[in-house]
Image: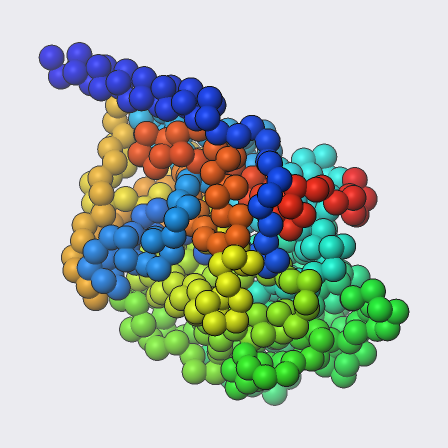
Length: 502
């Protein structure tokens, strides 16, 4: 009887999915229609944060689900994140952990690939700002600049790292940070770039006697580039007025706080005084501060010397809104990802709280300085990390540690919800997506859908791009659709001429 009932349930779920997809195909638009426009677009990305990371933070902060400001937005969808050559199967995703877990290249994305998809509309299998054939493709930053808008990228990691780079640069290697920085500062028309990885400061925000420079390591600043940009010698004609706009550099937390109000320079480079060391685990505003590990959130207080993501976001917006034609900005909370990679849910939650605070600050900014009639705000993630579920979840007994992923039968997969332990307590949880060759307590990205929340000008256009219906998460789009909708609302349906080399 149990076996027969399971088969009936499976068939019922599949039938619901198929019917829902047919309904969507009948009523959802297959192409973007005109009539929806936005002056400004703000995309906020919480790296490595899936549905259960949002839920865990809800439980920790408020003791209940659905408590974040963005969880009350009018448009809420799932997003598929697979790279070039991949797929998402909404039926198999809920019958077999192996369908969304592991780390097979054709299923599981990385931040650079996901950011490129959102920033260019092209899937790729590596690099940033390129398609699957390694051709350079136009970014939304380049298109927005062509339309006369100001542009910016902001991150709690280096602004040359994967997510901001996917929106603003072109490189075959996502870790060619020197190449990416040179593009962003000397070639791009960016008006704002903000992040960590300051060569004069360690991971605790302490000034070094000798800065970390290297002309050979691809991860660090060239000394000549740093010295020139600090001296105000790097720039280009960013706004097409025939004059060079040089970068104005800010570094201290007080600088970021002051930049949130009043007059601003034309171009601002913010390099937080933290994370400049030449080693794995550098280049973040908070994550690698000494003493912080698998503890409850904020057991080790945030560094007072690093600005919050809210402060960075408000500083960026105050610079960008000087342009009467509007702006595009991508704002990233980079570090829920590494919390989940290490299985440190408390650390992921504290980073997600910093992101949530930034969302609330941006919402307040829109309502005080713009309006929902002219600004589109999109909240999403690049991918889920860790396969977070409740205690007892998983796929049975794992294969040998040398195996790349669990090898089990589909009917052994068990989806167990997180346990709500109340406000101020980390929820009961389990990380299911091991990556064995990095150690028994290291976890990888998954192919699960991630959430998207949107409000403001043109937000409803996202609902016209639905690709299917997930039996648990509901209607979902693809991450490439975020680019298509952003370009659409910027041009009111008219596609601008291509830029870059295709």
